[in-house]
Image 1: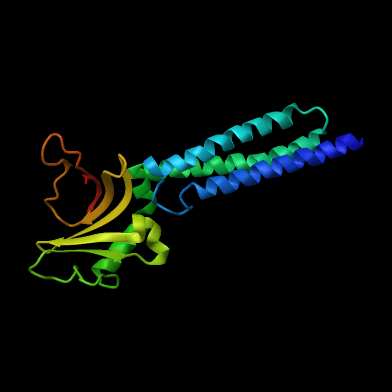
Image 2 (image 1 turned 90 degrees about the horizontal axis):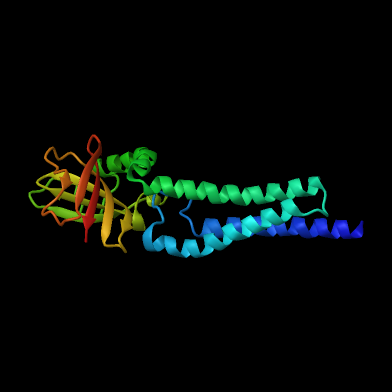
Length: 222
C-alpha cells in the first residue's frame, strides 16, 4: 500500500515536471501568441534543439505512465491530463508558427491590423521625422516605429515608408530566409503599374505577387 502511494506521488510529480518543462520550453522558443513574425531559418534552430528533447521526454513519459502496473487507472488518467497540456502546447505553437510562416496565412490573419497602420500613416497620425507621406517633388524613404500594440506586425517593430513620384509604398518586413539574404515583405501601395512576378534578370530572386487590392507579397534579395 505504501509503495503504491509513493509510486503514485512519484508519477504525478513526473507528469507535472514534464508538462511544466514543455510549456516553458515551447513558449520560450516560439513566436509570442499574437505575433505575426514567424520563427524560420536560423531563428528556428535553437528551438529545434529544445523541442526535439521535449518531444522525446513527453513520448517516454507517456509510455512510462501508460505501461505502469502499480498505480491505479485514476492516477494514470490524472497524469495523462497533465501531459496532454504539454502535448497541446507543442501542437498549438507549431500550428500557429506554420500558419504565420505561410505568406497568405500570415496576411489573412493580420490584414485588419496592417490596414489600421496604413490608415494611421496615410492620415498623418503615425509618421517619422522625415514625414514622407507629405506631398513633395522629392523621393523619400524612412522607417517608422510601430506603436507597442502593433509592434509584432513587422520585424524590429518598424515599417519602411517610401514615396516615389508621389506614390506611397509601405513595407512590413515579416520574415527572412536563406540565412537572412532574402527579405519577405507585405507591401501596401496604390501604384497602378506595380510590376509583378520575377524582376530584373532570370537569376534574380526578387518576386512580387498580388494578395489583395493594393496589397502585395514581395521577396527581395539583399
